[in-house]
Amino acid sequence: MTTALILFAHGARDPEWANPLRRVQAAIRQRAGDKAVELAFLEFMAPTLADCAAGLVAGGASEIVVIPMFIAQGGHLKRDVPEMLDRLRSTHPAVRFSLAGAIGEHETVVQAMAAAALQAAGSEFA
Figure (cartoon, rainbow, N blue to C red):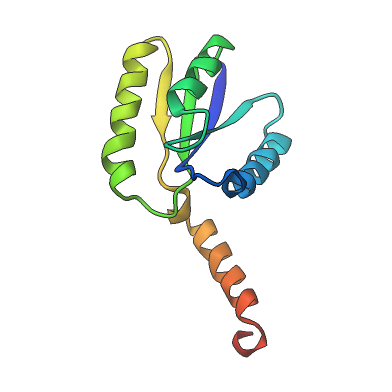
């Protein structure tokens, strides 16, 4: 089974908004060996989740893990994304799609944000 990873982000009108996500993608690719690691967007930017998944399926992926690069689970992750995954499952019935939780809710991310905030606040909070 060939597994691929999609980092799924909201998107923005400013193309530079995605630069930190591209850095995350590059860091994962360094660690993931020959696994496909792609970046897709909900709106404003390309590729969409559907287009990204289609490309991975065409490349031989039989399992796709979608990682929401969101701070927390809100309306998009509760309603929109599950519906999108249902459509992908219908379009690609031979492929197993799974959805992880919002990346910002992982304890390691929470702790990294806390450390970064304290560092940004300066010596008064050290």
